Amino acid sequence: METCKSPRTVLLWAHHLGQQIFADYSCRFSRHDFTLPQLFACLVLREHQKKSYRGVEALLRDCPQWRAAIGMRGAPDHNTLCRAFKLLMKPGNAERMLDLQARWARRLGMVHSAAKPLAIDSSMFESHHVSRHFEKRCRQSRRAQPKNPSKKQHNRRRSRTVKRLPKLSLAVSSKSHLILAAHATTGGGGDQPHLRPLLLHARRRGKVKSVVADGGYDSEENHCIARQEMKVRSIIPPTSGRPSARPPPTRHRRNMYHRFKRKADQKLYGQRWQAETVNSMIKRNLGSALRARTARRRSCELMLRVVTHNLMIFRRVSRGSRQSRTVLLIQLRSK
Image (tube, rainbow, N blue to C red; front, top):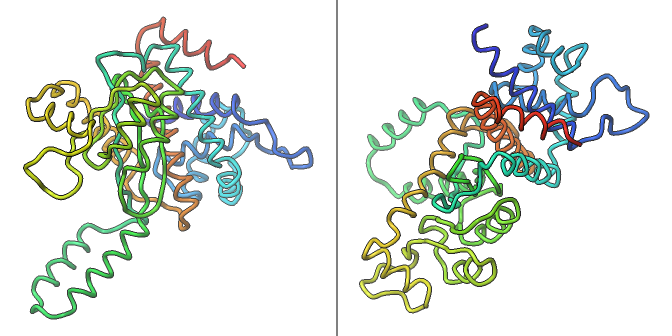
């Protein structure tokens, strides 16, 4: 039981967060066995421990001290947790959770820094658990077969697979690895349309002076949105489109071309890797494969992982100085 302290702390953080977001009960005629904040804390524990609904039910049954920490008298049934996930993890509730977490971060000074920009990036997740050994053997068997016209069929099969893959776009504070905005979609495609909602929500939740993103977000429209509408300096390499030795014809992309050529923004653009780090943290700590079976529930599961990641960041900060811990407790207990 040496690792029990960390899950218990995340469970407490999730319960405090749920108390400020949800009412105790969804209906006055419900059985009132468990409160909504308690069920939300169990869902966060499920993501933190990478369990199924039955797995987290067994885990809570074997850990009465964790249930007592959030005032639960018994372990909820796996069907109860499944229905609670559908009720609690609506898109509006996820945005409210990120708003509250951003307020906590502002109290601690975790998001304001002129030298640390906002980093934006996206990553694909697996729609189900996949055996890496099985994938390797499939590739080896395909290479061993003689070349035939079935290559087109393989490409069509791969295209159908990519269209069903979940995709998560993140706006990350480079100072603390805290996620300020997230957008969950399904399938591949360009990243350009996702910059506007990410930057809009991140700017609303924290002071953003500059934003860095990779070439997937490169477009003149995105530069105009960031610089003219939101007054945020955008640094995006002008690599989209056909390869050419001539600079881009539009104003902001041409300016980016010359600045990247003389490495004027090398130090600030180097912070873009913080978004790559957050993607790696989520996949290593919470898993790269999703358990949901529909596109809507996969998007909700991705947003729950974003909230869980932020709670793990706050848990790490709470182990710091006594002053930071006191400020956090005051903020958590304030209604």
